[in-house]
Image (cartoon, rainbow, N blue to C red; front, side, top):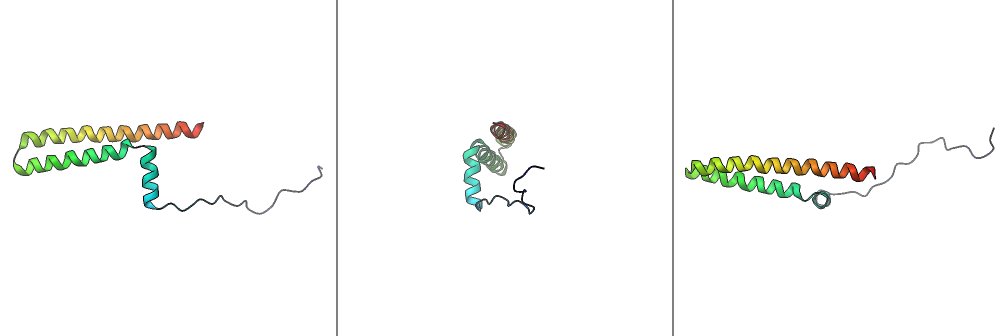
Length: 93
């Protein structure tokens, strides 16, 4: 038997993290991946403009904006996936 002090029998203490509120978390996530909020704003802007065009009776412009909304949503989704890939690569290093 090896001489020495035995390891502690009790549970090891968990690390303590600082409390992070909504504002701090939002700002941190925006700094990590700024393209996602930008894509969300673009999507909402195009959607609002499309709905306004629809209400005014400009169906051609409304259809064009709904197609642009799909593109903006695709951009947002691609930015979200890209951010997840970058985060995963950073965590491996």
